[in-house]
Amino acid sequence: MTQFTKRNIYLVIGFMLIIFGRYIPLPDGMQPSGMNVVGIFAGVLILWLTVAIDWPSLLCIGALGLVPEIGFKPIFAASFGNETIIFLICTFMCTYALSETPFLNRCALSFITSPAAKKGPWQFVISFFAAVICIGCFVSPTVLFVVFLPIVEKINEILKLKRGNKIANMLMMGLAFCVSVSAGMTPIAHVFSIMAMGFYNTATGLSIGYGQYMAFAVPVGILSTAFLVLIFRFILNPDMSEIKDIDISILKKELKPMDKKEKMILLVFCFIVILWVLPSLLKDVVPAVMKISKLGTAFPPILGVIIYSVITFDKKPLLNFNEGMKKGVQWSSIIMCAGTLAIGSAMTNKSIGLTHYIIETLSPILKDVSPIFLIIIFTAWACIQTNFSSNMVTVTVVTTVAVPLIQAANGTVSCPAVVSIIGMMSAYAFATPPAMPHIAMAIGSGWTDTGSMMKYGFIFMLVTTLITVFIGYPIASALM
Image 1 (cartoon, rainbow, N blue to C red):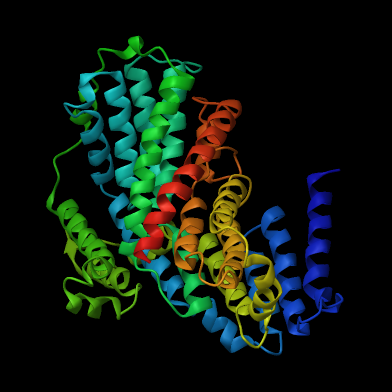
Image 2 (tube, one colour):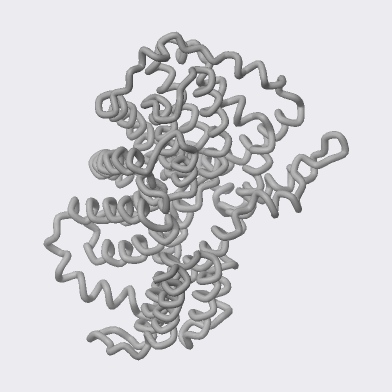
């Protein structure tokens, strides 16, 4: 069967569910509009998983607008009119301005040419991973990988490491894995955690602070990276004597000193990050900072884009707005985010009644279920699915199911903590090429291979799941 034929089959199935899903026999207690929304969700999900993520998202919005109980104006407000959309657009543009400077390279090289990195081979590896993790907290995964890829190739060239070498394989896998981990550590320039927070806000009317999210996700990311080093040290176990006298300081000579323009771009970006994180961290110490959070999560990046566009060097703005919109904004992600916000809004709409139906149906079943079982189920589900399908599909599906189920558990499990974990784990994609673009890019580089990525990716998946359940969840539930 050709790829074209498969695509047509998936299209037919998807459209059949979207159009005729409303006619599926109703379970006891479910409203017709609820089955209509479920059919749209199922049809669009098939298209997301098999065909594309962009135009099916527009189809999702259009189909939901035709549901009488919802209508187009509310669904437009819930999708493209959602604060998350303008937040993501402006955040992508701010990080684009930063990525156009040598700053990211400067940071990376400062880690791997530091005195600590020169003390030994494993110290160098730890410094390299730390560079990826630290920079990745503020930069989108694909941009981060593209920044580090030439650095890895230059390191291999200096160390005379050939393709197939265990050390070269470890560096490339480590880069790919750490990029994924860093994408789950903060909501800054990372779609998945923002989407999870948006779903939670839509379903409950409550919000999860950036500081609260990072207070649990950053420790989990750091601990996961530490275990990654142990996995490579004791399972992959490369012969590090090949690089015991490592010194790649020559790479720093290629960088020019930091100029005023780079300093100004960095200063503005730091200001934006402070506005994001400060309110939720200091709300109990300095209540006045909560005035900033009342302006909304989109305010800091909007302000950043304006500042970047106003300040000029050599008669040119720090950010070329048109260029930033074309090259910096990941439009496919934006469109899918709008579609997933729409479906999340529809499924939690009181007129549709799906949430009420799920809670009424499952409350008797879940009242005796162990809380740790639910936490393990949703953590493992998110981690496994994100390694085989789109990260945004993962966060959409798992969060949509998790929120009403946890509400049905009558407070035995922290809903914001589980939602935050789903957002984080949706970024923890390591094992297969469909997991994330940079995983496919790592395999395509020739420095690692599909077998190695799958083997160590699945081992790392297991480790991160255990860390998240037994360390991450207790921290998150205590803070949210």
